[in-house]
Amino acid sequence: MIHYIFDLDHTVIDSSHRQHTKPDGSLDLDNWRENCTQQKIMADKILPLADLMRSAWSNGHNVIICTARVLSIWVMFFWLIIICALMRYCHALKAIIEAMQK
Image 1 (cartoon, rainbow, N blue to C red):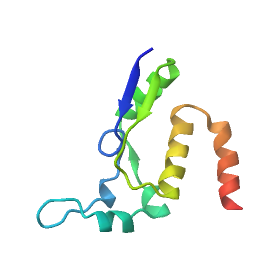
Image 2 (cartoon, rainbow, N blue to C red):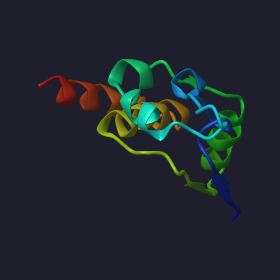
Image 3 (tube, rainbow, N blue to C red):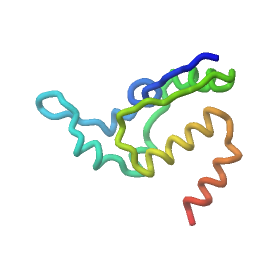
């Protein structure tokens, strides 16, 4: 069994539309937090490396996600959707969405 470790931003997903930098080039973390809204997170895009993540999981390998992201409920919900789609556990997705709408 192989252990695959994936970062998220700019590797598996593109969240650059939510990322702004300060004049010195450093990440504007306050702006990042403000942009962690449901609508903006759901606009994140999946990058091609996500196919390797899916393939590794499908072939029985360990998939580890390591990130420095600020995790909100919407980040976790987005990743639940992505994991369901990537790992083809979509039957669970309908129940999750229905529970979130109550």
